[in-house]
Image (cartoon, rainbow, N blue to C red; front, side, top):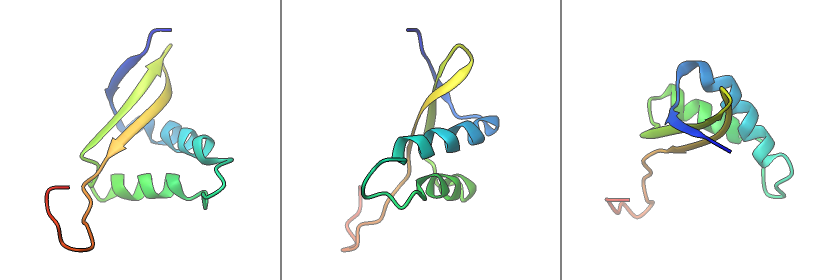
Length: 77
């Protein structure tokens, strides 16, 4: 299996939504809103890194990172 890892493009949003829903569909602690979180982070420009895995021109994986704030005010996370 050959994969291509590349930055997310705007046209990938729907595929990323679908993948995220599938990934958490049977997770016992999910509220099934994870795709909304990713969407909101993207819309606010808070995704520091967002990559997709593509196979045969189809998005088959996604990973994203965004900065966080620790409640005690610690920096550098």
